[in-house]
Image (cartoon, rainbow, N blue to C red; front, side, top):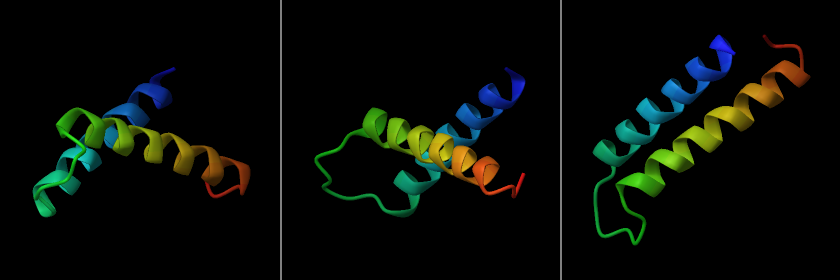
Length: 54
């Protein structure tokens, strides 16, 4: 459970950093950028565990 929470926090931070690096007139708001970062983090964690990287 703690690893899942850590993954969510990493995704949140990555989403915020991505928005800060590439601001602009995206139709996606801050919340969706954060959700996209969290989703990417969860998928990357799943793939990494499936391939034996972690």
